[in-house]
Amino acid sequence: MTELRDVQIKRLKMRSMRRGIKEMDLILQAYAERNLAAMDSAGLETYDALLHENDQDLYQWVTGQVAAPERFGDLITDIAQTFQK
Image 1 (tube, rainbow, N blue to C red):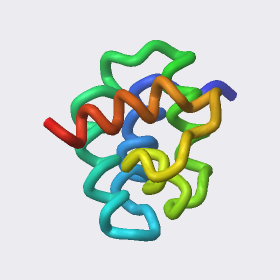
Image 2: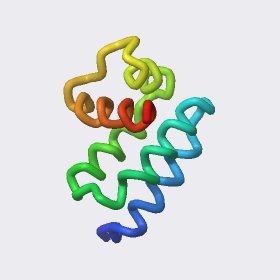
Image 3: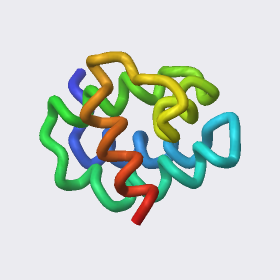
């Protein structure tokens, strides 16, 4: 059964704010609130895949300490810009 778009967005928002480290909770929660509703299906799938990554890796990617994997590059750049606003 396919997940309805509004249910998927709610799930992704919840997963964004219930991470492992507080910094990623704050960063991803803010990003999710501002951006998920406007994303297309492919964007939501990429974001969902990103949420399966380790918080320590995500934090290093968002803060520019380590380069993000190519498949997440544009999304990480967007998250980092949202966080800096």
